[in-house]
Length: 243
Image 1: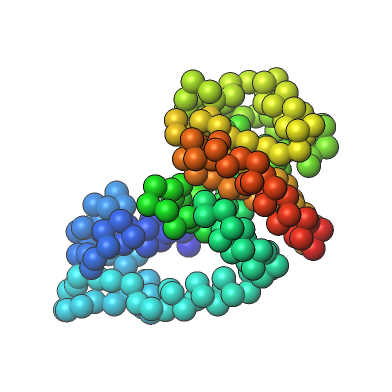
Image 2: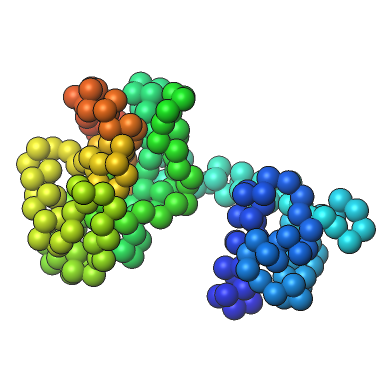
Protein backbone atom coordinates (compact mmCIF):
# COMPACT_ATOMS: atom_id res chain seq x y z
CA UNK A 1 0.00 0.00 0.00
CA UNK A 2 1.49 3.35 -1.01
CA UNK A 3 1.07 6.68 0.79
CA UNK A 4 -1.70 7.81 -1.57
CA UNK A 5 -3.72 4.66 -0.90
CA UNK A 6 -3.35 5.16 2.86
CA UNK A 7 -4.69 8.68 2.45
CA UNK A 8 -7.62 7.46 0.36
CA UNK A 9 -8.48 4.91 3.06
CA UNK A 10 -8.76 7.68 5.64
CA UNK A 11 -10.70 9.82 3.16
CA UNK A 12 -13.18 6.97 2.76
CA UNK A 13 -13.99 6.76 6.46
CA UNK A 14 -14.14 10.55 6.77
CA UNK A 15 -16.65 10.56 3.89
CA UNK A 16 -18.99 8.49 6.05
CA UNK A 17 -18.72 11.06 8.83
CA UNK A 18 -19.95 13.70 6.40
CA UNK A 19 -22.65 11.58 4.73
CA UNK A 20 -23.87 10.01 7.99
CA UNK A 21 -25.58 7.20 6.09
CA UNK A 22 -24.78 4.17 3.92
CA UNK A 23 -23.34 5.07 0.52
CA UNK A 24 -23.11 3.45 -2.87
CA UNK A 25 -19.80 2.85 -4.59
CA UNK A 26 -20.39 5.75 -6.97
CA UNK A 27 -21.24 8.08 -4.07
CA UNK A 28 -18.05 7.12 -2.25
CA UNK A 29 -15.96 7.59 -5.37
CA UNK A 30 -17.42 11.07 -5.83
CA UNK A 31 -17.00 11.94 -2.14
CA UNK A 32 -13.28 11.18 -2.13
CA UNK A 33 -12.53 12.24 -5.71
CA UNK A 34 -11.42 8.81 -6.86
CA UNK A 35 -12.04 6.89 -10.11
CA UNK A 36 -14.85 4.37 -9.72
CA UNK A 37 -12.66 1.35 -10.53
CA UNK A 38 -9.96 2.38 -8.05
CA UNK A 39 -12.59 3.12 -5.40
CA UNK A 40 -14.10 -0.32 -5.99
CA UNK A 41 -10.74 -1.99 -5.34
CA UNK A 42 -10.24 0.06 -2.18
CA UNK A 43 -13.73 -0.69 -0.86
CA UNK A 44 -13.39 -4.41 -1.56
CA UNK A 45 -10.06 -4.53 0.26
CA UNK A 46 -11.44 -2.75 3.34
CA UNK A 47 -14.57 -4.90 3.22
CA UNK A 48 -12.45 -8.05 3.15
CA UNK A 49 -10.74 -6.87 6.36
CA UNK A 50 -14.12 -6.55 8.08
CA UNK A 51 -14.32 -2.76 8.29
CA UNK A 52 -17.18 -2.33 5.77
CA UNK A 53 -20.30 -4.32 5.03
CA UNK A 54 -22.99 -4.23 2.33
CA UNK A 55 -26.58 -3.65 3.39
CA UNK A 56 -27.71 -5.51 0.23
CA UNK A 57 -26.09 -7.21 -2.70
CA UNK A 58 -23.97 -4.61 -4.58
CA UNK A 59 -24.33 -2.10 -1.77
CA UNK A 60 -24.75 0.41 -0.32
CA UNK A 61 -21.81 0.19 2.08
CA UNK A 62 -21.38 1.22 5.70
CA UNK A 63 -18.58 0.79 8.29
CA UNK A 64 -18.91 -2.09 10.74
CA UNK A 65 -18.42 -1.76 14.49
CA UNK A 66 -14.91 -3.16 14.07
CA UNK A 67 -13.53 0.33 13.47
CA UNK A 68 -15.17 1.53 16.69
CA UNK A 69 -13.78 -1.40 18.65
CA UNK A 70 -10.26 -0.86 17.32
CA UNK A 71 -10.53 2.86 18.12
CA UNK A 72 -11.70 2.15 21.66
CA UNK A 73 -8.78 -0.15 22.34
CA UNK A 74 -6.31 2.36 20.93
CA UNK A 75 -7.82 5.24 22.93
CA UNK A 76 -7.95 3.20 26.12
CA UNK A 77 -4.20 2.65 25.93
CA UNK A 78 -3.12 6.13 24.82
CA UNK A 79 -0.15 6.90 27.12
CA UNK A 80 -0.87 10.62 27.14
CA UNK A 81 -4.63 10.51 27.63
CA UNK A 82 -4.28 7.89 30.37
CA UNK A 83 -2.35 10.46 32.38
CA UNK A 84 -4.47 13.52 31.68
CA UNK A 85 -8.05 12.38 31.02
CA UNK A 86 -9.26 12.84 34.59
CA UNK A 87 -7.66 16.27 34.87
CA UNK A 88 -9.02 17.48 31.51
CA UNK A 89 -12.52 16.29 32.42
CA UNK A 90 -12.36 18.19 35.72
CA UNK A 91 -11.16 21.33 33.93
CA UNK A 92 -13.94 21.03 31.36
CA UNK A 93 -16.50 20.65 34.15
CA UNK A 94 -15.12 23.62 36.08
CA UNK A 95 -14.95 26.14 33.23
CA UNK A 96 -17.72 24.79 30.95
CA UNK A 97 -15.75 25.80 27.90
CA UNK A 98 -14.06 23.54 25.36
CA UNK A 99 -10.80 22.02 26.60
CA UNK A 100 -8.13 20.85 24.14
CA UNK A 101 -4.79 19.08 24.48
CA UNK A 102 -2.40 19.19 21.54
CA UNK A 103 1.18 19.53 20.42
CA UNK A 104 3.23 20.73 17.46
CA UNK A 105 3.98 18.34 14.63
CA UNK A 106 5.90 19.91 11.78
CA UNK A 107 4.45 23.35 11.13
CA UNK A 108 1.02 22.67 12.61
CA UNK A 109 -0.67 21.98 15.92
CA UNK A 110 -2.42 18.61 16.11
CA UNK A 111 -5.32 18.26 18.55
CA UNK A 112 -4.94 14.99 20.45
CA UNK A 113 -8.20 15.22 22.39
CA UNK A 114 -11.10 17.65 22.66
CA UNK A 115 -13.69 17.95 25.43
CA UNK A 116 -16.40 20.28 24.16
CA UNK A 117 -18.38 22.69 26.29
CA UNK A 118 -21.97 21.82 27.07
CA UNK A 119 -23.09 25.33 26.15
CA UNK A 120 -25.11 25.83 22.97
CA UNK A 121 -22.61 28.31 21.54
CA UNK A 122 -19.14 26.80 21.91
CA UNK A 123 -15.84 26.08 20.21
CA UNK A 124 -16.37 22.85 18.33
CA UNK A 125 -13.57 20.88 16.67
CA UNK A 126 -12.60 17.22 16.28
CA UNK A 127 -9.60 15.39 17.74
CA UNK A 128 -6.96 15.00 15.05
CA UNK A 129 -7.64 18.44 13.59
CA UNK A 130 -4.60 20.40 12.48
CA UNK A 131 -4.28 24.12 13.16
CA UNK A 132 -1.61 26.69 12.13
CA UNK A 133 1.01 27.24 14.82
CA UNK A 134 1.16 31.03 14.50
CA UNK A 135 -2.55 31.57 15.23
CA UNK A 136 -3.04 29.08 18.03
CA UNK A 137 -2.68 29.35 21.81
CA UNK A 138 -1.41 25.77 22.15
CA UNK A 139 1.12 26.44 19.40
CA UNK A 140 2.49 29.43 21.30
CA UNK A 141 2.57 27.48 24.58
CA UNK A 142 4.55 24.61 23.08
CA UNK A 143 6.90 27.00 21.28
CA UNK A 144 7.72 28.62 24.62
CA UNK A 145 9.26 25.36 25.87
CA UNK A 146 11.64 25.10 22.88
CA UNK A 147 15.20 26.36 23.12
CA UNK A 148 15.76 29.67 21.34
CA UNK A 149 17.56 28.21 18.31
CA UNK A 150 14.96 25.50 17.69
CA UNK A 151 12.11 27.97 18.03
CA UNK A 152 13.75 30.52 15.75
CA UNK A 153 14.30 27.87 13.07
CA UNK A 154 10.65 26.80 13.19
CA UNK A 155 9.32 30.36 13.19
CA UNK A 156 11.19 31.02 9.96
CA UNK A 157 9.40 28.11 8.26
CA UNK A 158 5.83 29.17 9.08
CA UNK A 159 3.62 30.66 6.36
CA UNK A 160 1.88 33.30 8.55
CA UNK A 161 -1.39 33.10 6.67
CA UNK A 162 -3.77 35.90 7.60
CA UNK A 163 -7.10 34.71 9.05
CA UNK A 164 -8.37 37.89 10.76
CA UNK A 165 -7.13 41.47 11.27
CA UNK A 166 -5.50 40.26 14.52
CA UNK A 167 -3.49 37.39 13.02
CA UNK A 168 0.26 37.51 13.73
CA UNK A 169 2.03 37.88 10.39
CA UNK A 170 5.77 37.53 11.02
CA UNK A 171 8.34 35.54 12.97
CA UNK A 172 9.42 38.68 14.79
CA UNK A 173 5.89 39.47 15.92
CA UNK A 174 5.26 35.89 17.02
CA UNK A 175 8.51 35.76 19.00
CA UNK A 176 7.58 39.02 20.74
CA UNK A 177 4.13 37.64 21.57
CA UNK A 178 5.63 34.45 23.03
CA UNK A 179 8.12 36.36 25.17
CA UNK A 180 5.41 38.72 26.43
CA UNK A 181 3.18 35.77 27.24
CA UNK A 182 5.98 34.01 29.12
CA UNK A 183 6.38 37.06 31.33
CA UNK A 184 2.60 37.22 31.84
CA UNK A 185 2.40 33.53 32.64
CA UNK A 186 -0.07 32.27 30.01
CA UNK A 187 -0.61 32.21 26.25
CA UNK A 188 -3.59 33.37 24.22
CA UNK A 189 -5.34 33.41 20.90
CA UNK A 190 -7.69 36.38 20.88
CA UNK A 191 -9.56 36.54 17.57
CA UNK A 192 -6.32 35.64 15.73
CA UNK A 193 -7.62 32.53 13.91
CA UNK A 194 -11.39 33.11 14.01
CA UNK A 195 -13.11 36.46 14.51
CA UNK A 196 -15.11 35.41 17.57
CA UNK A 197 -12.75 32.88 19.16
CA UNK A 198 -10.77 33.33 22.34
CA UNK A 199 -8.42 30.82 23.96
CA UNK A 200 -5.85 30.57 26.74
CA UNK A 201 -3.19 27.87 27.02
CA UNK A 202 -0.27 26.60 29.07
CA UNK A 203 2.46 24.07 28.24
CA UNK A 204 2.90 20.78 30.10
CA UNK A 205 5.48 17.99 30.00
CA UNK A 206 4.06 14.47 29.78
CA UNK A 207 6.18 11.35 29.31
CA UNK A 208 9.07 13.60 28.33
CA UNK A 209 7.15 15.37 25.55
CA UNK A 210 5.80 18.91 25.44
CA UNK A 211 2.08 19.49 25.00
CA UNK A 212 -0.30 22.39 25.40
CA UNK A 213 -3.67 22.52 27.15
CA UNK A 214 -6.14 25.22 26.22
CA UNK A 215 -9.55 26.53 27.20
CA UNK A 216 -11.43 27.97 24.21
CA UNK A 217 -14.78 29.58 23.56
CA UNK A 218 -16.55 32.69 22.23
CA UNK A 219 -14.20 35.65 22.63
CA UNK A 220 -16.52 37.84 24.70
CA UNK A 221 -17.38 35.02 27.11
CA UNK A 222 -13.72 34.05 27.44
CA UNK A 223 -12.72 37.64 28.14
CA UNK A 224 -15.33 38.03 30.88
CA UNK A 225 -14.00 34.99 32.76
CA UNK A 226 -10.33 35.14 31.78
CA UNK A 227 -8.92 35.32 35.32
CA UNK A 228 -10.93 32.31 36.47
CA UNK A 229 -9.98 30.34 33.36
CA UNK A 230 -6.27 31.09 33.75
CA UNK A 231 -6.36 30.13 37.43
CA UNK A 232 -8.15 26.85 36.68
CA UNK A 233 -5.74 26.08 33.84
CA UNK A 234 -2.72 26.73 36.06
CA UNK A 235 -4.07 24.39 38.74
CA UNK A 236 -4.68 21.66 36.16
CA UNK A 237 -1.28 21.98 34.52
CA UNK A 238 0.47 21.98 37.90
CA UNK A 239 -1.10 18.56 38.58
CA UNK A 240 -0.04 17.22 35.17
CA UNK A 241 3.32 18.84 34.41
CA UNK A 242 6.24 16.47 34.58
CA UNK A 243 4.15 13.29 34.95
